[in-house]
Length: 391
Image (cartoon, rainbow, N blue to C red; front, side):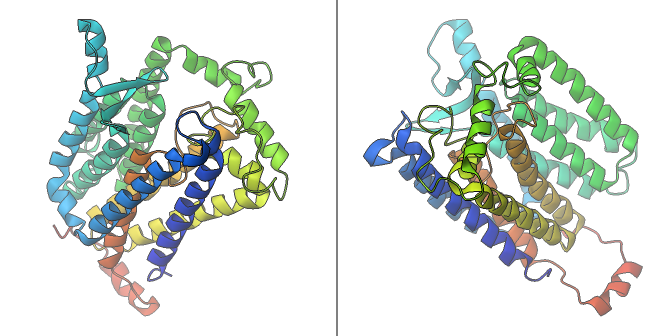
């Protein structure tokens, strides 16, 4: 299975990207941005698919150990990209029109590059994983000490999370914190340190909710969607209706009704309900199965990485995409408050797709260098479990 895991990884990612293009062609026809006969959003996404595929191939060819050497430069570049988004707040203070930063739906988390927009937080999460994996690969004997197991990695994690959260992007801040804490857990840090990370994050989240009170309303909405269906709970209420109207077999591809201006962002964050409405329960189960296969393959690849950095890097990337998928499905089924997170590979959005395909490319490279063992070799490895990073 370990030798074939990359096949399942690539196959599941390709199926999800194909599903995304198909559903986008169905849902974007009715969007204001560029639907109609021209299918503007579809062609934009196809262009991003091409760019993302090239990035995936490049990442698959680059020795993943190079990311260890470049990790601080990559993290610094990602932090600079996040800081550019704050130009919008600066422009409001100084009274001029923002040049690069763009604010959409109350959040300044995009950079405008001509007709294209880029969301730096998507790539910043990849950079954070590289930095955290590199840290615990370097200090693998000190992960249970206060300095190297909590304080310094906590500064790395906290800096990225604060920059993302300051953009009023609490969803990605939650994801970044969870992924960073996940890497710390797998690396072997103390549970008490993880408790400190969790407590600090919850305190920061409370402050964020205090200054963005509609976030608290989103939490309350999931407990009584019918009460909030004309306001903050509209998307999730209509999402429920879409899943329910799809039934077992769905209405048929292109025959969904909730995309007809009833469900906002049906082609981005809420594309999963459109799968349920048009393709039915079978489409939903198939989508979930594709993500399960992807996660299983990614974890298998990381388990057979030849060094600690590869193991932590592969785990972090797989955990990131799996968590984003889980949170998006939780939001669209009203099990979680609305966070504005896309469904990896499927939702419309170039930055999310690019980051996901880069992650796939890195996982492919880790697999290419993996230590694939036969069953009779396992006892030998168990007697020599201490592997050092080959950097």
